[in-house]
Each structure stands twice: as structure tokens, then as C-alpha cells.
Image (cartoon, rainbow over all chains, first blue to last red; front, side):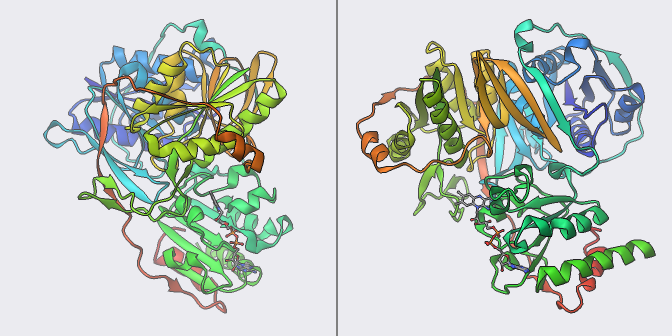
Length: 325
Length: 245
Ligand SMILES: Cc1cc2nc3c(=O)[nH]c(=O)nc-3n(C[C@H](O)[C@H](O)[C@H](O)COP(=O)(O)OP(=O)(O)OC[C@H]3O[C@@H](n4cnc5c(N)ncnc54)[C@H](O)[C@@H]3O)c2cc1C
């Protein structure tokens, strides 16, 4: 028996959400009294792979072949499922990233495993049961799912589990699973990845703005505040609908759901569909000139006032906080 | 070009989510059901592609008879015909198995789902279908075009995008950007009444998981207001009290 964790790389590096997944998988392995095996696919340097042992990987399978250098959903799912079989894995853990969302269900079908996506807590394994809490109803509720299959596939919501360092050793082995040509049909034509900015789904801090900002020309101060804080930027739906901001920044029921440590909402009314995507943020700050804006009902901190006056002052305050740090 | 769009019947986005039977089931009382917004985007794109490639769009729903108004809406938006698999949609695996069973011998060129349903948010059906039908799947796409025998899709990745070309047939889960929501016109609504809606019986599927309990998030404490004249206090609180910056 074992627990297997898939460690996705972005341009050869592991992000924090991957170390969260490894830490989570290590805790699951400890609960089941077994070892943790990581599988990496693509071109990742040995020193990067060696980091996985620090979070509890007892062994890392390294799949670094020409065919699998870039992500192909089908082929990656096949290789991960093969590794799970070879290592007799009872639980397979992935990060619920965009790629993870494509992989987990395919791996689940291959292994006849229950797929629990968007897990937010460790499983309850008392008495041999296997129950996992996940978010449901677009973050308006949680559902506890009991898996009854022998193998379980879990995808972990980013920022839901902390990174835990463990003193431990792990070795790295090459792993070569045969790949079927049928699984390699997708051809990547172009990849665009902004590496200078914090990506929204992984972000710990998010500065978001809505229609109250009046127009795209006013986002300079939002970007400045975000970059000073090391935060990602987000927006409400009407803002991306009007092309003031890219669709990838749209959060909410029909955008992406996020759960950062801090969400600052500026000039956003707090419609139920918007809240659905952000209400699991740990701390919520609202800046709105309307004291009746529904967002204040779910906020931890609020300022009733004009964003155009307040945000520049916040920028100054963050600068002086950093200067004194 | 034959397109299949998988649609789900979900509580309206403004629904207050509550549970009953000791928090083991969703309280349907007074809930208005709608076509899942992401499926609506998939359907809109499917109708556009069918128009420009002289194709057909079949919508499929796994649901009991109560979902028929939602299926009729999909027909009004422009689907050619509809299929309802007569069963309560137990979970994503069950739904994917039913749809795969229906689709396996029908030679669809393109199968679309929404990126996820707004009730259970599993985002699983598209990739499960791909696996069950042994064809490629892309779980979240923001653009979709057909070029010859290939689907050219743009998929979201953290902090960016990836453009892929994949030979048909494929399954794809669609998100915003793929199309605009279409509002059915009067002619669409009238013709929807007479378009074929076939009801088929489900196959049996092994149950791998089950929801045993629901919870709602703990209510937040009341908001701490900071005077607009001293916004710098907010930064102090976030640093010293909330310890998030
Ligand atoms: C099916 C469906 C799905 C939806 N999905 C989403 C979703 O995923 N995400 C989403 O965001 N929305 C979604 N919506 C839309 C949602 O209902 C709201 O319309 C939207 O969130 C409002 O955006 P907003 O708060 O930016 O704009 P508004 O509601 O116009 O609010 C602007 C706010 O800015 C404040 N303001 C104005 N000027 C200033 C100023 N100078 N300083 C400070 N504050 C100011 C105003 O007081 C107001 O509260 C959805 C709607 C539907 C029907």
C-alpha cells in the first residue's frame, strides 16, 4: 500500500500549491500508516525534485521523457494511473489546478476510484472509513463525501492545507511507463504564462475591483496596491464582460472560486453570485462608498468611502509599513 | 458535424442554500431550477458551430421528468433534439457513465459540457467522458474553433493560457469566453415545443462514493469599520491583528 501524489511543475518548478499537496498527501499517508510516493512528469532538475523529500516524499518517480515533456492530459493520466498500480496506491492526491481538474477524473475512471475534487480537509479515516470534506454549491456550502471504492483520487483546493516541512530522506528514481500513441493526439501550439505576476488561483492575497472603479483607465492604483502587497488582481463579472479586465480575473459563481488569506474588494457591491466565488477567503476587506452594499455583511473589515480617495492612501500606508519592516 | 451538449439542471444562482433530513440532503423547497450557466455557454457555442458547419446539436440530460423545462429551454436556444436519461443524477461518475453509454455508438464529433455544475462543482464529467469513450478531453476551455478535422482550443492555465490543436472527436468543458449567452427568441421558444425529446432508461452503475453530510459556512463576525479619514488604520489591522500582510 502507499499514497501517491502527482507533483505538477510549471516551467520546471514546483509552486507552493504543490508543496501543499505533498504535505497533505504525507498526512494522509501517516493516517494510513504507509509511505508517500511522488510522481513528477516533465523536465524538472534534480535539485528541484530533491525538495519533495522535505515535505515528506519517501520516493519520487521521475518521468522525464521527450514524449511527455509538455502536458498532454490523456498521456499524463495514463502514466499516473500506471504508477498508482505499480506502487499499489490506495490514495492518489493532486492539486486541484487547471491541469489537475483534467487529470483526476480520468485517473479515477482508470482505477475505478471515487474522485473527490476540491477537498479542503484531511480525510476522516477512523474505523476504516474514508470521508472527505469538499466545497459545494459554489462555496455556499460544504459536502462530506464518503468513498467506498478501494482506491480514492483526491484533488486538493489550493491554499486549503498548510505546507509542512518534515525532516526526512527520499530517493529519486526514473520511471518509464509505456505511452500509447493514441494518448498523444493533442498538440500544443502556444503557451503564454505570465511569470512576473502572482497567478490568481494560487494567490494568498488578492486585490479585486468592480464597476465602482468606473473604467479600465482607473486600474493603475489597483495594480499598484496589489504589486506592493505581492497580491494577484481580480475583478467582478461586469468588469470582465466590458473588457476592462481579462476574463481570467473574473471571480464568482461563473468565474473562478478562490480562497486566499486576504481578499480586498474595492467598488464591488457583493452580489450573491460574486460572493459565491470569494466567501471562503479567510479575511475579507470591503471598500465601498455605499454603506448599504451587501458586501459589508460578509466582510471582516470595511471602509465606507470613495475608492479614489482611499486606495491611494492605502498605497502610502503599505509603503510605510514596508519601509518600517 | 454532430455535436452533443451535456446539460445539467441546477438551482438558480440566487438560491439560498439550505439542507434538510439532518443535513443529508439539499432542501429543494421553493428552489427555482435553471440550465447550468456554463452548460448554456457550451450550448451557445455548439449552436454557432452547427450553423457554420451545417451540423446538428443534441442535448442530453441525466434527470427525472422535472428537468424537462430546462431541456425545453436548451431546445429553444437552438438544439436540434434532446435526450433525457431517466434517472436522478447521483454523482458525476453516474452521469458520465450514462452519457458515455448513449454516445458510444453515435459518432459525435464534439461533446461539450460546462466546466462544472454550479451545485456540486465537481468539474469531472468532461474528463470522465473522455476516458470512458477513449478520446481526448480538455477540462476548461475559453475558446473553441473547428479547423478542418481539428478542434483548436484555448485552455486556461495558472497565470496564462495554452492553445491546443486536437483531432476530433474530443470532449471539452467550456467556460466564459467560448461564447456569449444566447437568449431564446419567440421562434425558438415556439419550435422547442415540437422538437424531439427522447427518454431513455439508465444503465446500472457501481456507486463509488456518496455524500453523507452537508454543512454551511460558519457565519462571520460583524464587520469592523474603519473611518474613511484614517484608511492607514486598515493596513495596521491587517498587519497586527489579522496578520495577513
Ligand atoms: C447567472 C449569473 C451569474 C453571475 N456570476 C457572477 C460572477 O461569477 N461574478 C460576479 O462578480 N458577478 C456575477 N454575476 C453578476 C452579479 O449579479 C452582479 O451584477 C455583479 O457582481 C456586480 O458587479 P459589481 O459589484 O462590480 O458592480 P455593481 O453591482 O454595479 O456595484 C458597484 C459597486 O461599487 C460601488 N461604488 C461605486 N463608485 C464607488 C467609488 N467611487 N468608491 C467606492 N465604491 C464605489 C457601488 O456602491 C456599488 O456597490 C452573475 C449574475 C448572474 C445572473
